[in-house]
Length: 323
Image (cartoon, rainbow, N blue to C red; front, top):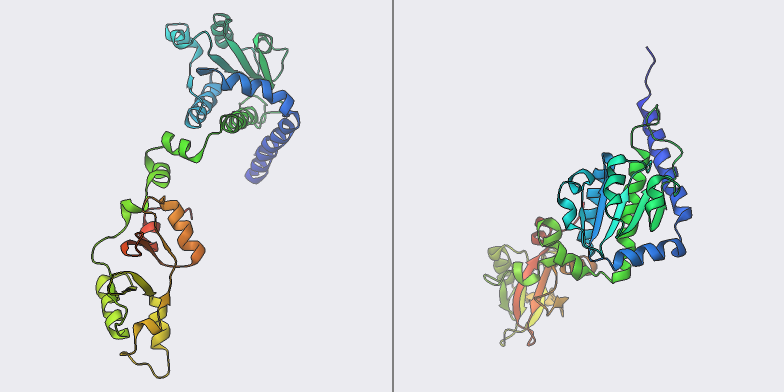
């Protein structure tokens, strides 16, 4: 029995895919893509079609387009022939996928959609699919990854990548923004990252506020009692004067002649980094904390009074940062 080398098989599979992507890159120019992107951008609906593995790729492409500002659906060719073709409007654009370009089911469905503009993905513009197309994207691959060169592997990888190319180009064409992305992704971690604001999570009660004249001991007791590891020094008008962080406290304790009755203000950070906008997105707040290397984000009103605080641990517990 022949000894299998799975590492060699893996490397070969990835090399074939990588070569196909690099080869495709050479044929993608502004001149070749501009009419395709313009066609897709002006379509009321992009209808993606394909059979077999191309159907699975088509569903993903349709989902990516929809989530990035281009209305799209996947329509199975067979189902289209039994009533679902009613979804296709006269101005809609068809994105048809078939590596060989000779899929009988797909070609039959497209024969009833000649009124629509068709963008095809196949290995040759001279295929049956290519001849029906208004625009064509050629899938250039040397071979599929399997030993008998038949299982859709390299070709489906290339189709998937070209779908991403179309989506990214359409995003740029339409000026699809981060706020648009948030609108399309209201749920899950993506939604949390895009929609959550500081005001939704900041702590407004049991704040570790102490007088700016407080001793180090008094500030330490308040910081410990409220569990934030920081004390916020405020004046008689409740305006923030400084922050005594856990790092400041440790440095004070390490002094040779430590005096717990010394003024906390002498060890505090005066004029600390704060924000004045409770509507700041939490992702932006996390970036602010990391940029300024602080553990506690303090939110102030226009009069410099403390509205609330957010600890770095709170933001990290939300799963906002990729590890």
